Structures are given as structure tokens and as C-alpha cells.
Length: 200
Image (cartoon, rainbow, N blue to C red; front, side, top):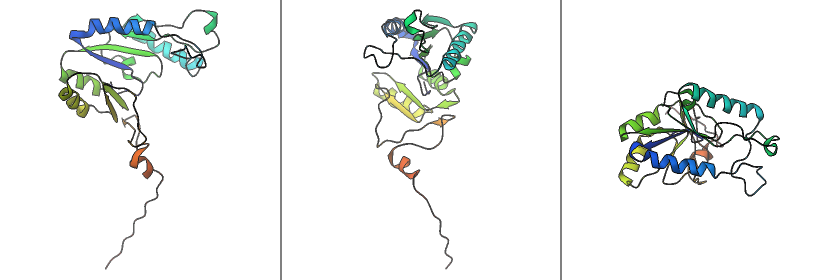
């Protein structure tokens, strides 16, 4: 899922039903609230305008044939009136061509898709204009290495997610940006290079 915010989730078809049920259960346990509240798991979005954009993307997914598996709208209640809250949302029944699967949502929305084999997974995962980061979860280390090398993403995590190091370069491919932060490559952004040509 080479998006910066985990927009797409590809699950092997043979385990997808059980995994989907566990995912919905986990989403149902995520408490919305202000960031200062230690019990909050999901805070408000950056603005009401951005929440409207997220809501419009979810609505477009439903129009495209997607099924809301969980969430899909603003939470009810006066306690959420002052913040741009949006429920954790899981959408199924989409293919990788849906607009929402091709956008960086920057909201608590996940497109749940399945794959049959490794080749199909790599093709779908790389079929994106973005390539910041991706995560792989598997017990097969050979498969993890093959897929990690094939993914068009600047960072790939295997059996972990969003683990970062100041010593490792971080940056994306394709429309996810140029250059790298951190590491030796990041330090070079602060250096000046000079070329000297001397004919002998």
C-alpha cells in the first residue's frame, strides 16, 4: 500500500474474511476525542473544510460501488461539535481504480481490498501516482523480501509500521516528492557543491 497515510490495505483473499472482522472490531474500539485526552485514539482533522473533503471522498466511494464496513460519517453528539471529527472508516467492495483508492486521503479512512497472488498484489500496489511508504505483514521472510524490493515506495516496513530512524533516509517516489530527509542523504541537502575544471 504505497501511500503515506495507509490509504489502501491489500489482504490475501484466503484470510480476508477473518481479517476484515478483526479490523472492524479494532476500529470500533477507537475512541474519538481531543488530543489532550489520554483516552483519545483519534483526534479531529486539521479543519472543517478538510473533513468535508474526506466526507466527499467517502461518498464518491459509495457511489462507485463501495460498501461502508464501518464508520463513514461524522460522529454524533454535542461533544464532537467543536472539532472536525470523522469516524474511523473502512470501505470494502472497491477495486484499485476507484478515485478514493488513488488519492491521499489524510483522514481515518481505509480501502479494504483483497488479492489472490503475489504478482497481482505487486501490480495493484504499484498502480498509484504516489510512493511514500508501504507496510508488509507476513510470516514468510522470503516473500517479504521479494515484495519489499518490488514495491515502488521510498520506505517499506516489514512486520512493523512507521518505525523511523534519524540515520535512515526518508522520502518518496513518484508524486510523493523528491530528495530525502535524514541520514547522509538528508545532510547533503544542507551542503553546497562546487565544480572546478582545470585543463592541464
